[in-house]
Length: 395
Image 1 (spheres, rainbow, N blue to C red):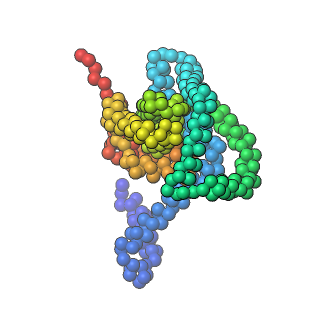
Image 2: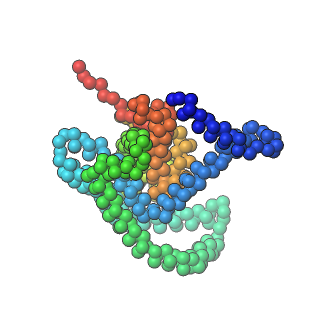
Image 3: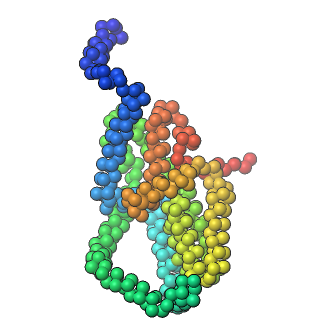
């Protein structure tokens, strides 16, 4: 490049510097404060952009939630689906097997839960009445020394409170029809999106990349593919965790004689897809049932079973089956899940960790310019990176 070609640029930069306003007040501001201010307004812009995105997601939740559910289900069935494709199973047949198989598993679990609830409902109801009677007697004979009249008075106040809130309860009951309609519409939309992803996910993504500038498409494509691999590995890991927790805790409840062991196992399986928090809440439910229906000592043994299953799953079986894993700290998981729940309720808690993992992997991929080097992001830089253990080939 000649000097004449460089001169206009230099002249423009010099003119820009000359037009920069500099006052005595600017010179008096400490450099640290100027740097902090520069970071602050940039962070405010980022926070504003994130706020707009979150607002749009909330406004479009009837579309976003089915989309996210379909993507998570696709990630769950992706290993089996791609395995069938690699073994020359026709795509349409692989889609049918994946979708119907998923529906059959979920329906079977729910049917088992409903079947045992129906079977044991009479005994559970009788034990509930017995437990309430014992608790009432404890309030009378225990350290509180309440009288029967005081207990009846407290119950009457609670009933009055419920009657005062009757209008709100009635309004909520009227809203059930709309909620059921939304759930049905969301289920159909989820199924349609899932079928589209399995049938032509690659074509849909190639069209999506065309929304970006031509120079950025390679980077965007590589970042998204790296994030998708992480989401698939996350889903596979959570499926393993959910299965181990459900079988272990459900079997422990059955052997200890805790009622509703199958529904407890189903709840543990579903709850384990919310990392850490779901397993803790569903495990606490199992302990509570044991305390109410079987007494303190069975509840202690149930607590020991829950803790043992989670420790064996987390420290022995999962590393043995899945290989090395770089996991996020439990505190970060709790904060991410809590933040997702505050923003989006149960769906927010469910999608918080995989979304954070996807964003982290994609961000590291872009910041390291991995599409140019061809190297994957370093595991130490990632929030969640679960890699299956490579199997040794026998000679």
